[in-house]
Length: 149
Image 1 (cartoon, helix red, strand yellow):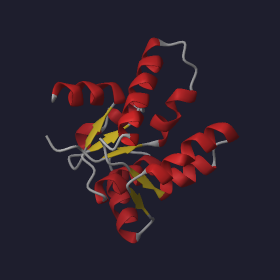
Image 2 (image 1 turned 45 degrees about the vertical axis):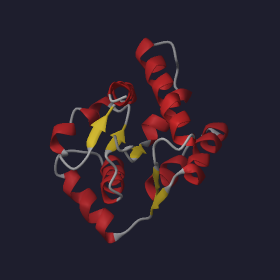
Image 3 (image 1 turned 120 degrees about the horizontal axis):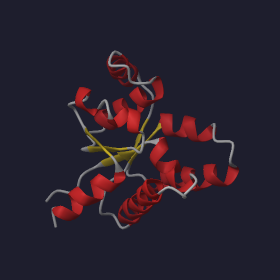
């Protein structure tokens, strides 16, 4: 099986900094940490983007911001802003997808990612509108990848 190129959105990177009292949040955190371990091991190629930089720069928690920013250096590819990205993002806006989410999707698709990993339930509920990439929760991603082994 070919290893899929992946993109994690800002919600996913921040999941481990969320309150961990709810079982689902803890499970998503564990799944995200497993994914990140596999990225570091070279199992999954990772794409980082200008919109991840931008959102992370807005993070008021300095320690969280620093922990997340290191993933830019770990990523295999970087997606800068471009007219193509903005144009593609506009298309997703027409489905009611929020501006930043649309930019994330456009970056992931432009860099030929197979998976867009997010913990954003509202965004995942619109996954049927986006045929170009598989939008998935980190838990489901782990199940799918481990099921392939």
